[in-house]
Length: 77
Picture 1 (cartoon, rainbow, N blue to C red):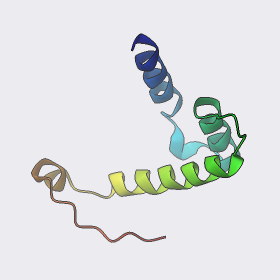
Picture 2: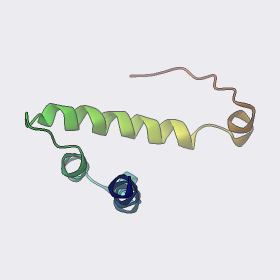
Picture 3: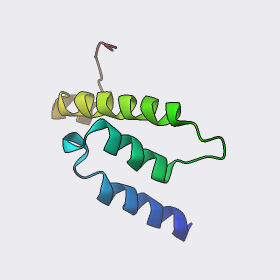
Picture 4: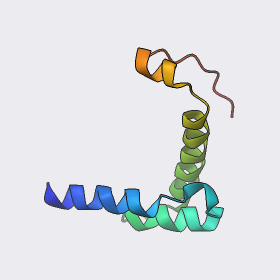
């Protein structure tokens, strides 16, 4: 459990400037923490795309929606 918490905080510290990173840097960051034995770089691309959209979603949601638990949004790909 101690290792998971350490990993979690390592991720939080390194992704502080997520919006300012280039796509290659984001992919390398994700591969560092989420590597597997298959060597799937496609997975890193998909995760990068997902987190970019998640950051956009979080920035555009109102505090009122968060506190009331009401999330009305349209997913755009």
